[in-house]
Length: 45
Image 1: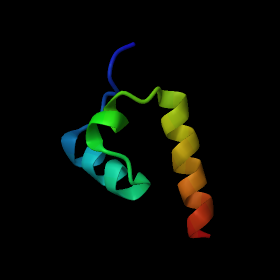
Image 2 (image 1 turned 90 degrees about the horizontal axis):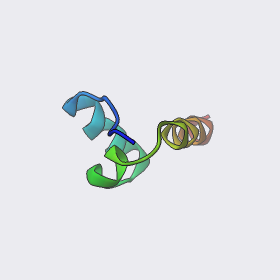
Image 3 (image 1 turned 45 degrees about the horizontal axis):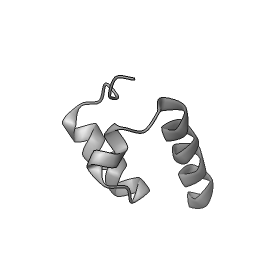
Image 4 (image 1 turned 180 degrees about the vertical axis):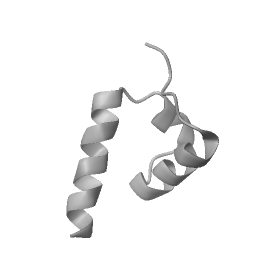
């Protein structure tokens, strides 16, 4: 599985928003990352 195709700025913002270390974020499968993003959005509301 190849790493996520993210710009460095996007990767940093996502790791801060999700409280995940950058290295771990880059190795997450895409579907898990999307699930975590959706959970984070629900918490905001």
